Image 1 (spheres, rainbow, N blue to C red):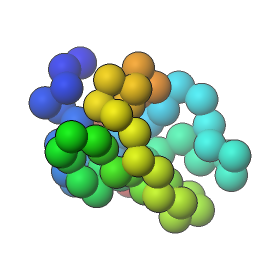
Image 2 (image 1 turned 90 degrees about the horizontal axis):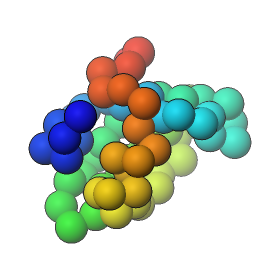
Image 3 (image 1 turned 180 degrees about the vertical axis):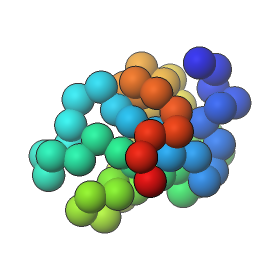
Image 4 (image 1 turned 30 degrees about the vertical axis):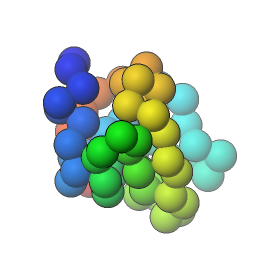
Length: 63
């Protein structure tokens, strides 16, 4: 998995679940940081690209 795979519009699955229990996130913005949205509860989080890459299990989880 490389950083260029984490582009806007991609759906990812994280290693650990969010507080709401969801593991799938959509990448909304990709720039100096990545803005992601939980597909279960709608929470928006901003992470650095390296941190997001570390937390990602797979790209292309369930939408």
